[in-house]
Length: 376
Image 1 (cartoon, helix red, strand yellow):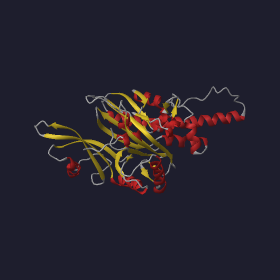
Image 2 (image 1 turned 90 degrees about the vertical axis):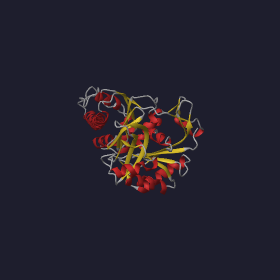
Image 3 (image 1 turned 180 degrees about the vertical axis):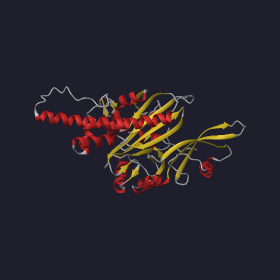
């Protein structure tokens, strides 16, 4: 049983998502009793960086109020290219409360993009090990993020009237919500979270986090390419994007529409449809190449059974099939370990007696943040 109800707060480029988790059911699924998805201008929060404090603050305030959050019980996620994790071994005699100070004093580089002086570190104990010369060491997983990013996110929450309990790496929260395994497991798990302006690749080896990598780029790049090709507003292209499907080839010769091609209007429509589809395919192909390079760089020789996708961009029809062909490994949409409580306020989110799977997938990171726990 949970002693407190934490709220996970996931701030994205197109909106803010908040969920309140009241506990776990008998199968280990998180129980979400309240949720909020509040749209936001896409230029207010870009690639993990706050660009318009007023808009982000007001959206966060609305989301947290909607789920009945309490100050001191909100865990907010942070996701930007300047973050990372590393395995570090310290002498076992170093006290838990002194570990991050010791790591900084040693000048350990946790993430190449985060200097020790500019970073905020979090050390999680894995196990005690013995070196070849018989010395006992504490094996740690250490996460790092830019102090300026952590402070910026914290200020947003405080200004909205909610003191955050913790700031967690969004990629870690996503992994937490999607992966469950036995303590003896040595399987590798790869999670790819395709956001609007940031994509994050997380690798777990056994029960322990191995790497996390975020890079600028996501579903909004595809929307922008379509918008430019169609000469239409972004909002219209965003709606159109999910009604279309990525072609199986990089570019296809657009024929076979069954039109009278000697008619001027038909030719114009064919040209417009073809250019939009090609723009979508090219932009998606670029993103898929970036994801594949990140996966291949981090996974190396580690064997994995499948790659789990989440995030809005991952729900583009044909995206997972294209990525699967590129990686040569099974790619599937992730399934968060979470259920919605069957309350009156949640009834609209159920279809044929089941939760809307697209909604649940969009809440993956927020759910994982709400599953954060204080480390003794």
